[in-house]
Length: 221
Ligand SMILES: NC(=O)c1ccc[n+]([C@@H]2O[C@H](COP(=O)([O-])OP(=O)(O)OC[C@H]3O[C@@H](n4cnc5c(N)ncnc54)[C@H](OP(=O)(O)O)[C@@H]3O)[C@@H](O)[C@H]2O)c1
Image 1: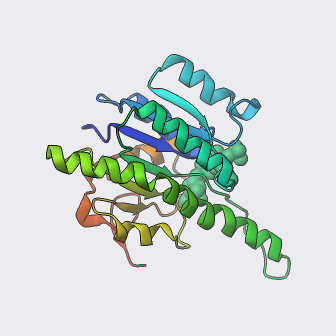
Image 2: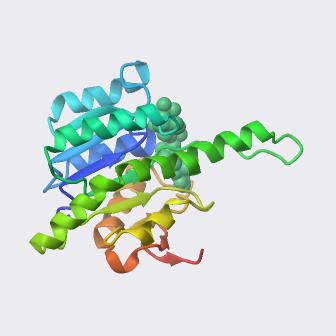
Image 3: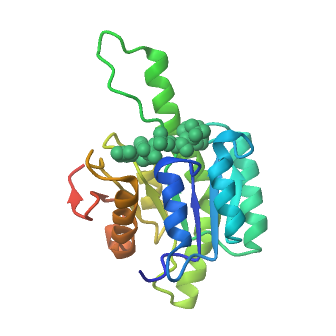
């Protein structure tokens, strides 16, 4: 696969799809120079697998980031900015999210619904907003240099419930909003992530604001 981006940040990268994204990104033939692998508790037991991976690959920077906590987001932006030494961030992958088992109408609670909304919608918006200056910087750098592969993009790995980040996609040139619909139950995380990265490498500015499935097919909103 061709180079995807010079610098990539993945939220919720200590397990599941996020961890596998980091694994496959670092194994690419032309890997990103910087992979910011963020998670909410990097020093706890749930951060172990990510640290083990980062120990083998100096391009992986483990950064604490709780997408629901403004102070944590602010500190993560500062850390990433410092590491990038004046360059922008090319790709933000909003992967962190809560996946809850189906709840019947009679047992759903306002607290449960608000928790999902807070994490999957508000958290995603806050992270995208906080990293917007760094994404704009990368977008500006790439248009100045005439680069086609390293523009700036926000990618939301979400189920089909909508996201505020799409609004940001319209606001900034070269931002690509790609959302991944549900993985079939028969697919392994490795296969799913392979498909996400394959599809991602084929999307461009013209796909901004669209909702695509794992095969890259555009779905109606
Ligand atoms: N699996 C699927 O079939 C599927 C389909 C469609 C969409 N998606 C979306 O893809 C994303 C990843 O799915 P997955 O299957 O890998 O889920 P997962 O195994 O449950 O992992 C979720 C990740 O998000 C992190 N996270 C949750 N809340 C967070 C917060 N406030 N701040 C930072 N990190 C937080 C978790 O961290 P902790 O370890 O700290 O909890 C974990 O790393 C989710 O957004 C999900 O909605 C998945």
